[in-house]
Image (cartoon, rainbow, N blue to C red; front, side, top):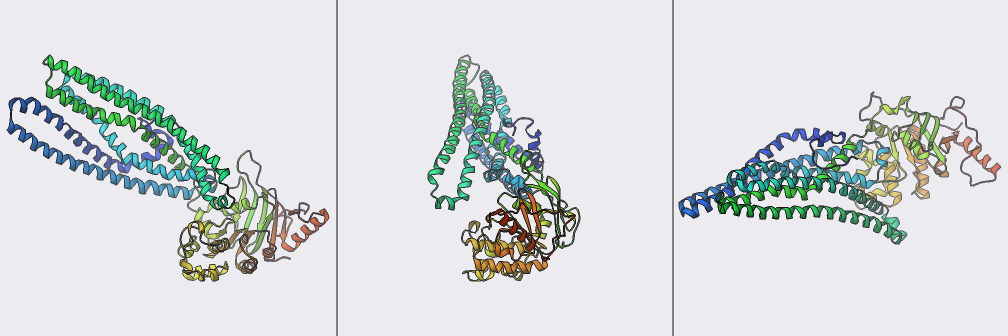
Length: 605
């Protein structure tokens, strides 16, 4: 990420910030309105010093009570008009804030939903949470005090001009102070930018640990991991606090210097003005009015020195959001319109690795699975089973080769189309805060009550759901915390089958089920296999009885594939010869290439 030094002329010229330029274009009329209102607000601000000048130099000297009454009435009208203008400007800025919240927030949400899984996995959860705080930073800068400050800054020249007109002997003091303030603000921006960037890095590291603690709170509590986690937390918290103090010290140094310069300017103006009054070059009213105008002139500059951290954070937030918006998305529209697939799946020399230097997790896999039937994928941990499923789902894109659905490359289909054709029950059953019905219908919001109940029955969840106090309206809690693990898994399976997708993929579906539920799931798989293509990763002997075919994987390669009875018999024979009954993969079973082997069929021949 490029270094951010705050608002500069080419702020929107970098690739990461082009999105902001396009976003601000519709808001241009509103910002013009703010500038016009700010013009009148600053013109009216001149009225008070002029009023003081007239009172001291004319009313008091000539004892003009009538003139004083007229001036007071005029100032009352000015104050009332100033209030109306400021209220108008506030309402406009509130409208800007609302548009930013809606537009940028929606754009970020849609972008995250459209990003490939690999992009989402490449960064910790705390980073994605930070992006939504970045939206708040953009909103606060473009619609808050920082935006008003930027609108008022150009009118500093107006106050300087008025000082030249009413008190020219002291105006040069303001010119010098103005130049020093600009230099101080520029230096503050460069110094605070580097410190703020380092602070943000430490805060992200600390927030990442917090996110892990929250996600693993049950494990932490059960294993009493507080003593282990505490030093990690204290170290990262200490680093974040240290960088915050460093950044705060630098910011406070410049802010205090600004206050000191403001006081020195007042003393210098009063001193020079006193000499000018004694030389009859300036009146007392002119000096007082000039001092009041100096506050209007130097006030925004002093605020700029203190608010530079906000501008730095704004630039960093815009860069992060821009980098996210520029990332490649999943396909949103299908190249062709395909009718409901039958469910034939083909892997053509498919390979995948997580980085260029890492070994292949899936290595030159060739596999053809006919439509219908139940196929099990087996293998030891790290053999590539789950990765193969994600390639099948289109969540990962192969480095080499193709994945075909009914002979068509799945890359040409949108994420929405694939999700409608391939139901998925992951190993980690993640539910969302809401009701049981809401969670089952998440993949098919238009599903009827009958379809939801049918899906729950297929997943062996219906009888348990109707026993709950509120049935399908029962709240599941955050992440499904109010339900048992087995219940969460059944709801996840129901979510996978609702909508009747032709292909159903399950990753260790019996992990949280008891023996009775596992036996019931076996019968469900048999029934599903009659009309669907079912792919499941499992090592359950019970579920294997429902599988027509089995695929054995080892180090990303297929070591054996074919009818379940034949492959399992060969595996048993290999284990017996090796005298190692615990061996899980028959590496000596000869792998037959698809050109030479019979296609995987629905029944074991």
